[in-house]
Image 1 (spheres, rainbow, N blue to C red):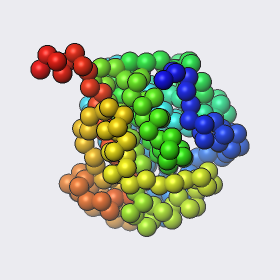
Image 2: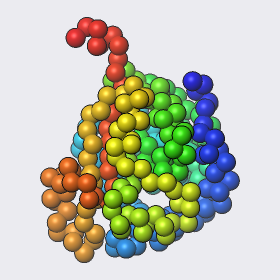
Image 3: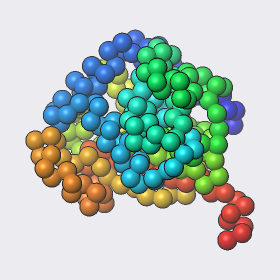
Image 4: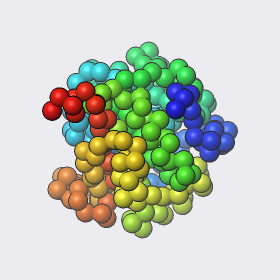
Length: 243
């Protein structure tokens, strides 16, 4: 597969995301207002999840679908020793990245400028914007950019949660969204030749029940979470043959 391959539907959506770039954070905050939190809370949630679950030290991480860098900023905060790179189809979004992120990593709307051999690649709420027939290709493309034994982290909205479906319906740039169950994501990961590490359901309690949030890690098998995370690992043939 060509390293410059981008899903056709995402290419067609680039202009639409460009149009939302100047008010990206505002639109996200509106869509999640029912939770009582802002988009910044959810970005920090995912960054701490990655830091806690994978605990990478040094190396490179690619935020594939980085938007204006909300998640990337928190990833750098919680994993300061990692180089954080980012790709997004919207050049206008990438142009709005914080200068401190641009100085420490590569952020681009062209896959030709993005590297390979990443220790971690994150697809955060990207797949629901991709036509179902093209999702496997995107996961394969991401998997091909992993270092041997590198990990792919996929976050997605859970269609089983009614509040999630409402939030998606309220998001200005989720008009094309087709939510996918975790079982579909796991199947695509398997077909892409990656090995499942874990599947966790996440984000259970709104802000007015924040005192219950310390319980969320113990609920990771409960499918009622607002989102889910799938972690998969690239299988290195050399290591498999030696084991």
